[in-house]
Amino acid sequence: MLQRVYDNLGQFQISTATGGSTTTVVDTKQNNTQNEDDTWNEGYLFIISADGAAPEGQFRRISGYDDSAGTFTVDTAFTVAPASGDKYGWANNYFPLYTVINRCNAALKDMGAIAQVDTTTLDSADNKTEYAIAATWKKYPPFAIDYQTNTGDSNDNQWEPIPHWRYVPSTAGNAAMIEIKQLTSGRDIRVWYKDVHADLSDYDDEIYEGFPDNLVVAMCTEACLRWQNARLGGGDDFLVQLWNESKDLVASAERKSQIWQPPTKQPTLEIPQ
Image 1 (tube, one colour):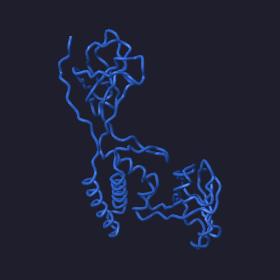
Image 2: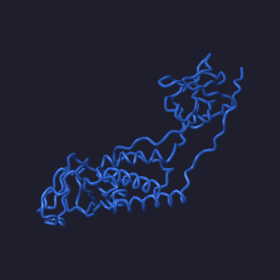
Image 3: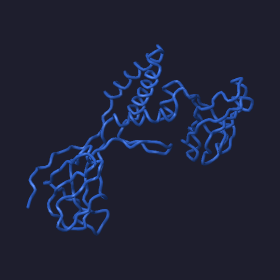
Protein backbone atom coordinates (compact mmCIF):
# COMPACT_ATOMS: atom_id res chain seq x y z
CA MET A 1 0.00 0.00 0.00
CA LEU A 2 2.72 2.47 0.99
CA GLN A 3 4.72 1.80 -2.16
CA ARG A 4 1.70 2.42 -4.38
CA VAL A 5 0.72 5.55 -2.46
CA TYR A 6 4.21 7.05 -2.74
CA ASP A 7 4.20 6.16 -6.43
CA ASN A 8 0.85 7.96 -6.89
CA LEU A 9 2.27 10.97 -5.06
CA GLY A 10 5.12 11.15 -7.58
CA GLN A 11 7.71 10.59 -4.87
CA PHE A 12 8.88 7.04 -5.60
CA GLN A 13 12.02 6.09 -7.50
CA ILE A 14 12.81 2.43 -8.21
CA SER A 15 16.02 0.58 -9.01
CA THR A 16 17.81 -2.71 -8.30
CA ALA A 17 20.52 -3.14 -5.71
CA THR A 18 24.02 -4.28 -6.60
CA GLY A 19 24.74 -5.26 -3.02
CA GLY A 20 24.18 -4.25 0.56
CA SER A 21 24.30 -5.10 4.23
CA THR A 22 21.68 -5.09 6.97
CA THR A 23 22.09 -1.30 7.22
CA THR A 24 22.92 -0.36 3.62
CA VAL A 25 21.66 -0.71 0.08
CA VAL A 26 24.34 -0.33 -2.56
CA ASP A 27 23.43 0.60 -6.13
CA THR A 28 26.41 1.47 -8.29
CA LYS A 29 24.03 2.75 -10.98
CA GLN A 30 23.42 5.74 -8.68
CA ASN A 31 27.11 6.66 -8.47
CA ASN A 32 27.59 10.44 -8.81
CA THR A 33 24.00 11.05 -9.91
CA GLN A 34 23.22 13.60 -7.18
CA ASN A 35 26.54 15.48 -7.00
CA GLU A 36 26.06 15.73 -3.25
CA ASP A 37 26.21 13.36 -0.29
CA ASP A 38 23.26 12.90 2.07
CA THR A 39 20.76 14.07 -0.57
CA TRP A 40 18.19 11.52 0.55
CA ASN A 41 18.64 11.83 4.31
CA GLU A 42 15.35 11.68 6.25
CA GLY A 43 13.70 10.02 3.26
CA TYR A 44 12.60 6.39 3.20
CA LEU A 45 13.78 3.23 1.49
CA PHE A 46 11.60 0.22 0.69
CA ILE A 47 12.67 -3.28 -0.34
CA ILE A 48 10.11 -4.02 -3.05
CA SER A 49 11.08 -7.57 -3.94
CA ALA A 50 13.69 -10.07 -2.76
CA ASP A 51 12.54 -13.36 -4.33
CA GLY A 52 9.67 -13.59 -1.84
CA ALA A 53 11.96 -13.68 1.19
CA ALA A 54 13.18 -11.18 3.80
CA PRO A 55 13.79 -8.29 3.67
CA GLU A 56 11.02 -7.99 1.06
CA GLY A 57 8.43 -5.41 2.08
CA GLN A 58 10.53 -3.86 4.83
CA PHE A 59 11.03 -0.09 4.94
CA ARG A 60 13.48 2.09 6.81
CA ARG A 61 14.41 5.77 7.25
CA ILE A 62 17.45 6.88 5.25
CA SER A 63 20.15 8.26 7.57
CA GLY A 64 22.95 8.69 5.05
CA TYR A 65 23.74 8.67 1.35
CA ASP A 66 27.20 8.34 -0.23
CA ASP A 67 26.88 9.71 -3.75
CA SER A 68 30.26 8.49 -4.98
CA ALA A 69 29.39 4.89 -4.05
CA GLY A 70 25.62 4.95 -4.63
CA THR A 71 25.10 3.73 -1.07
CA PHE A 72 22.05 4.37 1.07
CA THR A 73 22.41 3.90 4.83
CA VAL A 74 19.32 3.27 6.94
CA ASP A 75 18.77 4.07 10.60
CA THR A 76 17.49 0.62 11.60
CA ALA A 77 18.87 -2.66 10.34
CA PHE A 78 16.91 -4.84 7.95
CA THR A 79 16.31 -8.35 9.25
CA VAL A 80 18.35 -9.70 6.32
CA ALA A 81 20.87 -7.91 4.12
CA PRO A 82 19.51 -6.83 0.71
CA ALA A 83 21.22 -8.74 -2.08
CA SER A 84 22.28 -7.94 -5.62
CA GLY A 85 19.25 -7.94 -7.87
CA ASP A 86 16.75 -7.05 -5.12
CA LYS A 87 14.36 -4.36 -6.27
CA TYR A 88 14.15 -1.35 -4.00
CA GLY A 89 12.52 2.07 -4.03
CA TRP A 90 13.10 5.33 -2.20
CA ALA A 91 11.33 8.58 -1.55
CA ASN A 92 12.33 11.91 -0.05
CA ASN A 93 10.75 13.39 3.05
CA TYR A 94 8.25 15.71 1.33
CA PHE A 95 5.56 13.30 2.52
CA PRO A 96 7.01 12.02 5.83
CA LEU A 97 6.55 8.27 6.17
CA TYR A 98 4.84 8.21 9.54
CA THR A 99 2.54 11.04 8.52
CA VAL A 100 1.64 8.98 5.43
CA ILE A 101 0.98 5.95 7.66
CA ASN A 102 -1.19 8.09 9.92
CA ARG A 103 -3.18 9.45 6.97
CA CYS A 104 -3.59 5.94 5.55
CA ASN A 105 -4.87 4.66 8.89
CA ALA A 106 -7.42 7.47 8.91
CA ALA A 107 -8.46 6.62 5.34
CA LEU A 108 -8.91 2.94 6.23
CA LYS A 109 -11.19 3.94 9.09
CA ASP A 110 -13.14 6.24 6.76
CA MET A 111 -13.93 3.20 4.62
CA GLY A 112 -16.40 2.12 7.26
CA ALA A 113 -16.83 -0.52 9.91
CA ILE A 114 -15.86 -4.13 9.20
CA ALA A 115 -17.97 -7.09 10.27
CA GLN A 116 -16.14 -9.21 12.86
CA VAL A 117 -16.84 -12.02 15.30
CA ASP A 118 -15.59 -12.61 18.84
CA THR A 119 -15.73 -16.06 20.41
CA THR A 120 -13.36 -15.48 23.33
CA THR A 121 -14.68 -12.55 25.37
CA LEU A 122 -17.88 -14.12 26.70
CA ASP A 123 -18.56 -17.59 28.14
CA SER A 124 -21.90 -18.67 29.50
CA ALA A 125 -22.25 -19.13 33.26
CA ASP A 126 -24.81 -20.53 35.67
CA ASN A 127 -27.39 -18.11 37.04
CA LYS A 128 -26.29 -15.37 34.67
CA THR A 129 -28.29 -13.54 32.05
CA GLU A 130 -26.41 -10.20 32.01
CA TYR A 131 -22.94 -9.98 30.49
CA ALA A 132 -20.57 -7.00 30.38
CA ILE A 133 -19.30 -6.52 26.84
CA ALA A 134 -15.99 -5.45 25.32
CA ALA A 135 -15.48 -1.69 25.15
CA THR A 136 -15.07 -1.77 21.35
CA TRP A 137 -18.62 -3.09 21.01
CA LYS A 138 -20.04 0.14 22.42
CA LYS A 139 -19.03 1.98 19.25
CA TYR A 140 -20.98 -0.44 17.07
CA PRO A 141 -23.28 -2.59 19.24
CA PRO A 142 -23.53 -6.31 18.36
CA PHE A 143 -25.94 -7.27 15.59
CA ALA A 144 -26.11 -11.04 16.16
CA ILE A 145 -25.25 -13.50 18.95
CA ASP A 146 -24.79 -17.30 18.86
CA TYR A 147 -23.82 -19.82 21.47
CA GLN A 148 -21.88 -23.06 21.30
CA THR A 149 -23.97 -26.20 21.61
CA ASN A 150 -21.19 -28.75 21.00
CA THR A 151 -17.97 -28.57 23.05
CA GLY A 152 -16.49 -31.87 21.92
CA ASP A 153 -15.17 -30.83 18.50
CA SER A 154 -13.46 -27.53 17.74
CA ASN A 155 -14.44 -27.93 14.07
CA ASP A 156 -18.10 -28.61 14.84
CA ASN A 157 -19.27 -26.13 17.46
CA GLN A 158 -22.86 -26.26 16.18
CA TRP A 159 -23.48 -22.60 16.85
CA GLU A 160 -27.07 -21.86 17.74
CA PRO A 161 -28.44 -18.36 17.08
CA ILE A 162 -29.89 -16.58 20.11
CA PRO A 163 -33.02 -14.86 18.80
CA HIS A 164 -33.91 -12.93 21.96
CA TRP A 165 -31.40 -10.57 23.53
CA ARG A 166 -31.09 -6.92 24.48
CA TYR A 167 -28.19 -4.46 24.26
CA VAL A 168 -28.03 -2.21 27.32
CA PRO A 169 -25.88 0.94 26.76
CA SER A 170 -23.89 2.70 29.45
CA THR A 171 -22.27 6.04 30.17
CA ALA A 172 -18.67 6.78 29.16
CA GLY A 173 -16.11 4.66 30.97
CA ASN A 174 -18.60 2.04 32.10
CA ALA A 175 -19.23 -1.36 30.54
CA ALA A 176 -22.34 -1.83 28.44
CA MET A 177 -24.28 -5.07 28.83
CA ILE A 178 -26.16 -7.63 26.82
CA GLU A 179 -29.07 -9.50 28.34
CA ILE A 180 -29.73 -13.01 27.07
CA LYS A 181 -31.65 -16.03 28.23
CA GLN A 182 -30.05 -18.48 30.68
CA LEU A 183 -27.65 -20.73 28.79
CA THR A 184 -25.88 -23.96 29.63
CA SER A 185 -22.72 -22.93 31.45
CA GLY A 186 -19.22 -23.21 30.07
CA ARG A 187 -20.12 -22.48 26.44
CA ASP A 188 -18.53 -19.94 24.14
CA ILE A 189 -20.78 -17.05 23.20
CA ARG A 190 -20.11 -15.81 19.68
CA VAL A 191 -20.80 -12.11 19.18
CA TRP A 192 -21.11 -10.55 15.73
CA TYR A 193 -20.18 -6.88 15.72
CA LYS A 194 -18.52 -4.19 13.61
CA ASP A 195 -15.45 -2.07 14.16
CA VAL A 196 -13.23 0.19 12.08
CA HIS A 197 -9.91 -1.00 10.70
CA ALA A 198 -7.08 -1.55 13.18
CA ASP A 199 -4.12 0.81 12.92
CA LEU A 200 -1.20 -0.31 10.76
CA SER A 201 2.38 0.44 11.76
CA ASP A 202 4.81 -2.19 10.49
CA TYR A 203 5.61 -3.62 7.06
CA ASP A 204 3.93 -6.97 7.76
CA ASP A 205 0.68 -5.59 9.21
CA GLU A 206 -2.29 -6.90 7.25
CA ILE A 207 -4.91 -4.83 5.44
CA TYR A 208 -8.47 -6.16 5.51
CA GLU A 209 -8.85 -8.29 2.39
CA GLY A 210 -12.45 -7.22 1.90
CA PHE A 211 -11.35 -3.70 0.98
CA PRO A 212 -10.64 -3.38 -2.77
CA ASP A 213 -6.98 -2.54 -3.41
CA ASN A 214 -7.69 0.30 -5.83
CA LEU A 215 -10.05 1.99 -3.38
CA VAL A 216 -7.59 1.67 -0.48
CA VAL A 217 -4.76 3.23 -2.51
CA ALA A 218 -6.99 5.98 -3.92
CA MET A 219 -8.30 6.99 -0.50
CA CYS A 220 -4.85 6.92 1.09
CA THR A 221 -3.39 9.01 -1.74
CA GLU A 222 -6.21 11.57 -1.43
CA ALA A 223 -5.73 11.75 2.34
CA CYS A 224 -2.00 12.47 1.93
CA LEU A 225 -2.58 15.15 -0.69
CA ARG A 226 -5.25 16.75 1.49
CA TRP A 227 -2.79 16.88 4.39
CA GLN A 228 -0.01 18.41 2.29
CA ASN A 229 -2.37 20.94 0.74
CA ALA A 230 -3.59 21.99 4.19
CA ARG A 231 -0.02 22.24 5.49
CA LEU A 232 0.88 24.58 2.63
CA GLY A 233 -2.30 26.58 2.97
CA GLY A 234 -3.40 25.74 -0.57
CA GLY A 235 -0.48 27.70 -1.97
CA ASP A 236 0.78 25.15 -4.50
CA ASP A 237 -1.43 25.14 -7.61
CA PHE A 238 0.01 21.87 -8.94
CA LEU A 239 -0.62 20.16 -5.60
CA VAL A 240 -4.21 21.43 -5.59
CA GLN A 241 -4.65 19.99 -9.09
CA LEU A 242 -3.29 16.61 -7.96
CA TRP A 243 -5.58 16.65 -4.95
CA ASN A 244 -8.65 17.38 -7.11
CA GLU A 245 -7.66 14.59 -9.49
CA SER A 246 -7.23 12.21 -6.55
CA LYS A 247 -10.75 13.00 -5.32
CA ASP A 248 -12.07 12.05 -8.76
CA LEU A 249 -10.14 8.77 -8.58
CA VAL A 250 -11.66 8.01 -5.17
CA ALA A 251 -15.17 8.65 -6.54
CA SER A 252 -14.46 6.40 -9.54
CA ALA A 253 -13.06 3.62 -7.31
CA GLU A 254 -16.08 3.85 -5.02
CA ARG A 255 -18.44 3.41 -7.98
CA LYS A 256 -16.57 0.33 -9.15
CA SER A 257 -16.05 -1.26 -5.73
CA GLN A 258 -18.32 -3.15 -3.43
CA ILE A 259 -17.39 -3.93 0.16
CA TRP A 260 -19.11 -7.03 1.52
CA GLN A 261 -21.29 -6.60 4.57
CA PRO A 262 -23.32 -9.35 6.26
CA PRO A 263 -27.08 -8.96 6.51
CA THR A 264 -28.06 -7.63 9.89
CA LYS A 265 -31.29 -8.20 11.74
CA GLN A 266 -32.33 -6.42 14.87
CA PRO A 267 -33.07 -8.81 17.74
CA THR A 268 -36.47 -9.01 19.34
CA LEU A 269 -36.43 -7.30 22.70
CA GLU A 270 -38.33 -10.02 24.50
CA ILE A 271 -36.18 -11.71 27.14
CA PRO A 272 -37.61 -15.21 27.75
CA GLN A 273 -37.98 -16.17 31.37
